[in-house]
Amino acid sequence: MRKPEFLERAGITFRQLDYWARAGYITPEGAETTSSDARSLAPDQVHEVRTLVAEGFTKTEIAERFHVSYGTVRDVVEHRRAYADDRDPSRIAEHANTPKSGHARLWTEAECAVAERMGRLVRAGIEVATAAEIARRPDEQIEIGPGVFVQVAPEVSR
Image (cartoon, rainbow, N blue to C red; front, side):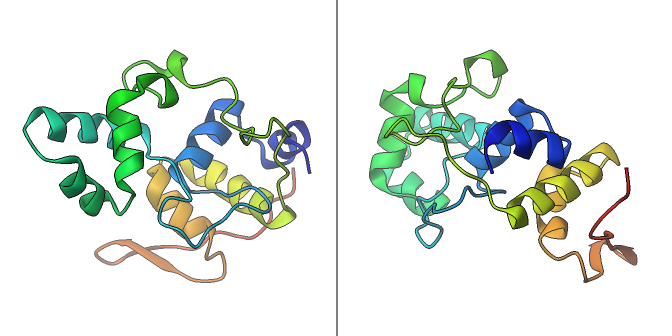
């Protein structure tokens, strides 16, 4: 399905879709998911990469730490425009949901369901990374703290 339908059905905003896709929490149809570079770095990771460079870490050390290629780290450091600045959400690239070919990405029903569950969890106050983990395992109880378990219903009637 295309982005407008995906956003409506999942009940999320474009900014959420953009961030979650960049962070690797949701994946468009046909995206390579086996590579560690299949996801972009999340904005907080971009900031951390830049901090580590300023502290004298090498790009190779940083790449190993984040499980990404040297080129990804180089892009973060040398091509600021390619990555969002975590302190300025307005800098997020307009075409983050479009592959380099310029063709709009398509989203599967399964990813729409994950995004919808993530949205519900985030609105309930669960951190995004935790919400992503829980949303991918709707039939399981996930321990989010000592003795605190969460289980999400696969669907909610609107």
